[in-house]
Length: 368
Figure (spheres, rainbow, N blue to C red):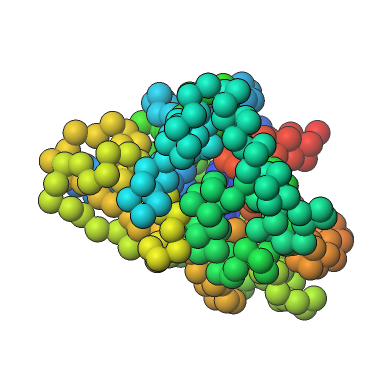
């Protein structure tokens, strides 16, 4: 019997939306399903007090890939937002990434030569041959002062364990800029969709059938019977019922509140780098779109241990999980009518531009 659809796309996030758009344009019939009650996956935004709130954390689009930028610009207009987060260490404010403003505040240095000399002095004073953990590696790169104030507390909150217990390879390098430039991303194109990401994804899916609140894995055989091919963007280990073991993630939880004031912190993102503050950062959503509303919405972000059943956010790309994923990838390659993609399907931490690039390449290859 002929199937109802050419493609079933599991997941209405950015990867699934690119696939659905390109397949539909090519004349293929698609059904998109998602177990959540909304489209756009983790880039979902919704309006509170006239402010577009990033429900699953700050998402700033940035890329050097003009094709990707032009592709998404078909569905939205990007504003001129430039990501310039700041770090709050016990009330001391520092610019991120580490740049001349950071070094001036930290040590009083003014010229790049002075800053470079100070960093080298700090590195040499505590250098460890063959660093065995993240702490030793970070100090080797930038010295004790920056490590203690801007790396240690934040990293330990993020990973839920001491830096001395984290592997050195997590921090292979740290961005150090000897310029007075607070632009976090070294990307040619940068911004946030005017009106939010959800509106952008809705535009991508406007000619596609979408069903929300549908759990693919709860009736896999039934859904598979509807389509010739499946594009699966859920957790790869869940697809195979965890038969080789469970891949690990870090999770995040948010406390969001509306404040009866126009401006809470003066910046979209403030990282709290001391160990005593329980959250890692505070997001003030209105600043992503230069809002002038009378009220403001903030989200405190807490890094959390992940357990099966929680929302997976960041793949733990260490050696143990990498080896386990390699085994699942081998199984996935044996599923001839299934395309595994996206952050969960490929167990990769992808920036948004990379999600679009990979999806475009994959869908074009499949249409050949």
